[in-house]
Image (cartoon, rainbow, N blue to C red; front, side, top):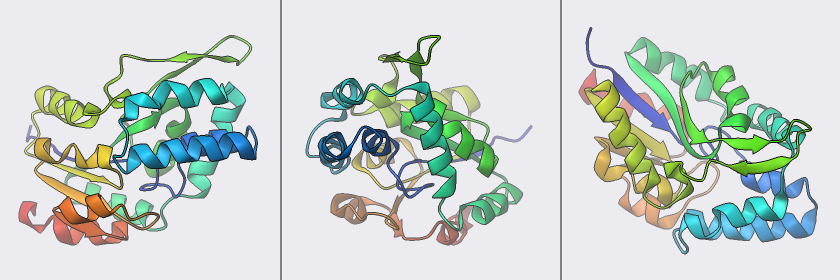
Length: 217
């Protein structure tokens, strides 16, 4: 069996137009939304470490299971317009797409199913039997700075891929650049200047991805 080629996608503001944590805040009203969005933006631009706001945002929001299901629907409704066709073509070319996210596996699953992506590396949220918030997996790597390169290294050890490409919009994605063979910054929904400057390539449509992967054809 030949070694796989992995193409790893961030979810929020990459495969989908929205930031799931911000949309959870929006469901709690404009004041909470504004507070959460400001923290998310600061973390995604690298101005503050992810771990300084990860649990704080969730404690402010205290999302229910129903809220998370609603975000799952919003992810699908705002999917990047070229994603389905692009991922189908990448699979035909021998790539295995996965999602590597600082978001929540529970919410991302509907989008992954929509796009035919089996594996999600993301944070699990926990709920009571009645659907109330009961915390999150605090040990998961993407709850902190440097988490995504750790995930890439784990995937390398587990799957022994012949190539790993990371695609994303945020500084947490850019952190994975040394662990990947290629880092592609994404700017359709938001352009973060550091990501644009330091990425190996920077694109505004996922449809541009196949042309960047010709070296592995």
